[in-house]
Image (cartoon, rainbow, N blue to C red):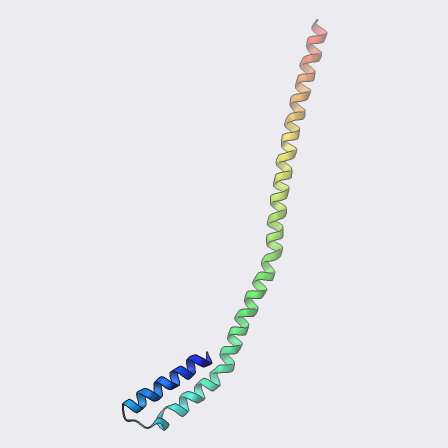
Length: 103
């Protein structure tokens, strides 16, 4: 921000000189405005950085929750498959027992 302000000061000085105006007309006020604005813009950027860090910290538990849900989803699918296998095995044993009883 400061380098952009200094560049603006230099451009303004060049423009003022090209128009034949005295530098004292505008530059002191521009310098004062930039000096006054610097702490505010620094605080603004610091606040934005802090918000970004807080958002990152807040997203970590959510990411862990999503990972847990995916893990539980996989576990539920695994349990469902095992239940289907057990059900098929019981059906086969029942059929074999009925066939043995009929013979």
